[in-house]
Amino acid sequence: MGYKREMDVEIWSDVVCPWCYIGKRRFEHALAAFEHSGEVNVRWRSFQLDPNAPAASEGDPVERLAVKYGLTRAAAEAAQARVTANAATEGLDFRLDTARSGNTFDAHRLIHYAHSGGKQDSMKERLMAAYFVEGAAIGEREVLTRLAVEVGLDELAVRAVLDGDAYAADVRHDELEARQLGITGVPFFVLDRAFGVSGAQPSDVMLAALQQAWTSSHPLQMVSAGDIDTSCADESCAV
Image (spheres, rainbow, N blue to C red):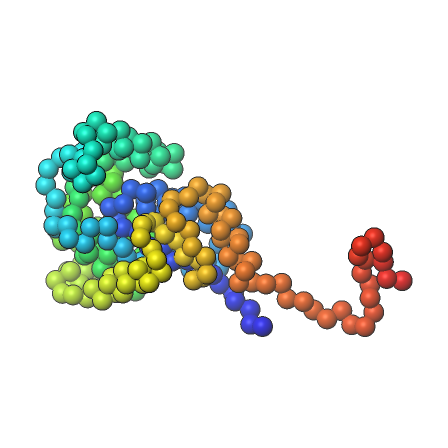
């Protein structure tokens, strides 16, 4: 039996999904406590909550939330307060009242481009922080270019990506795979294509999932002990 030296974790999420950012932090905390963290490969996958969103959404974020889910303004404000409180427990200072939503397709393309330069996690983190904390217009290309440059990507290369259709097929492939895997909400964590974890689960739940997936893909290898029995079992010992 071959020995699998690493474990792959794929995370489907959207840049404008608050639970995705909270889930990212919780996963990071779990990974930091995982004894094999250095052997885990993390890959961010694309999932658009609203593929038909305009490049920039106008108006009051609270009112947009209320209209989208059929809530009163008070209920929408309460929902935002609950999410903000959960984010705070993970050290995230959400400013949902200033969030400037928009279409995330180009942001996802940049995340794929960043992977080619080893900066995918940095790009994902920067985009989420810009949207949830800084009120950046996440669908505008000048904003995306600035954020990409801030994580160390080449400006001319970034502009070339955004001006064309590079990595568009990668985004669509991720979304197709999500449907094939039965993923209907995010965040969704897939461990070694064998275990799935839905939602921004607490860090201890994520850690247990990592440990279970690792044990499954790294079974104990038995070494022959020879012909002499030197073990004890069921209250008796070989003599």
